[in-house]
Length: 113
Image (cartoon, rainbow, N blue to C red; front, side):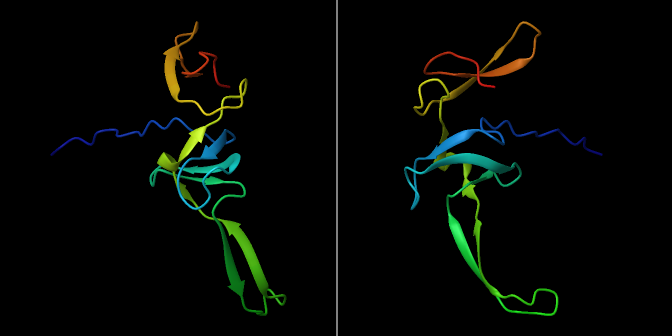
């Protein structure tokens, strides 16, 4: 019997990070990350990739209408914005004093909280 390996995905972007879209219809838009879908490698960014859904009135929801929601976008199409400079940056990892991996900005070298 084969052993299962722990294939944990390491992503550079986390919930709450401010990102800029670098590809697609919403290129250039910025916003905070609302959710990270790790298994699909996608993120949901506030105000980006907004989809409309038409809902019919029903007994549970007597008011029908149009509902706007953000759809997911692939994580390769967004880039982290550095808090200090406001420009996009790549993300690296290094050990801090407590021997824990900490993200840092490759452009400025500052730690990302």
